[in-house]
Image (cartoon, rainbow, N blue to C red):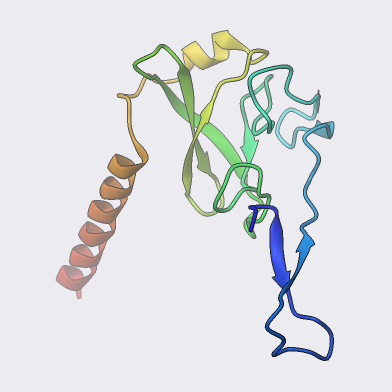
Length: 152
């Protein structure tokens, strides 16, 4: 089963052995949208990406993806601010976005039409992997739990 399909039970035949699959509705990667932060219109990506995940003018993003890039399944929908950037081993620049509503952090590659001066103006962070970020979050959560028990 492909990533863009979901299982749908047949009407009146919940126990049927043959599942029916229906294609999910996906947001088109060709859509133009208006940035929530700077209110400028943003065109589809020019090259190197299938999904536009941040504004090239102010670098703000929106928390719309849940599990995979482009799935547009997140229930949060908050604005995501670019809090820093780092450079991968092969020279690729990556933005670190943090959701202003729920605090989730995501990594996004810069696009060809991004304002590179803004990218360079962000705080430079050490290159991180998603495993390292998850480990840091766990340590922070454990620290908060210990602080709560100590205060009480």
